[in-house]
Length: 141
Image 1 (tube, rainbow, N blue to C red):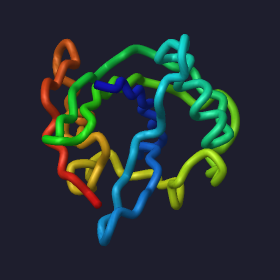
Image 2 (cartoon, one colour; image 1 turned 180 degrees about the vertical axis):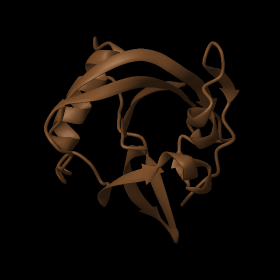
Image 3 (tube, one colour; image 1 turned 135 degrees about the horizontal axis):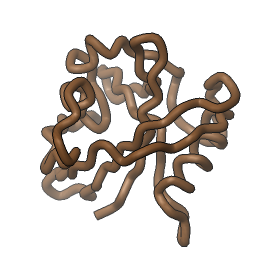
Image 4 (cartoon, rainbow, N blue to C red; image 1 turned 90 degrees about the horizontal axis):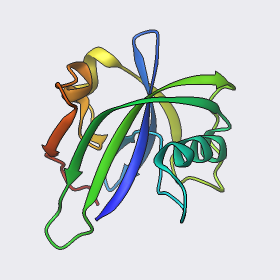
């Protein structure tokens, strides 16, 4: 199982996401990435958001965790942290991400979008302890 940290960056009733296209589906990923060897999850987030979006961020508390498990595919533990932008505006760096665009999604409509991980409803009402268990994640190709 891989571990993938992501950062919840909110602004004026919206959440920062990266839009990808899989087949005919737009999928909105939470900014984050895979840890390098010897890197903590918070260090990963600081590095990934600097590399992919040109942002300086502050990483706050871990608020959600849950597993995405696809039969026959690699499993992932998603760890979502609160965060703030300290400097910069998000601009895609195409050498560091395959995302098509930066998208600020309305928080109130998160459950209606294809999110990865699929945690839109959970973000709106973060459960006590923040552990979601298995995340019901559709597969996009």
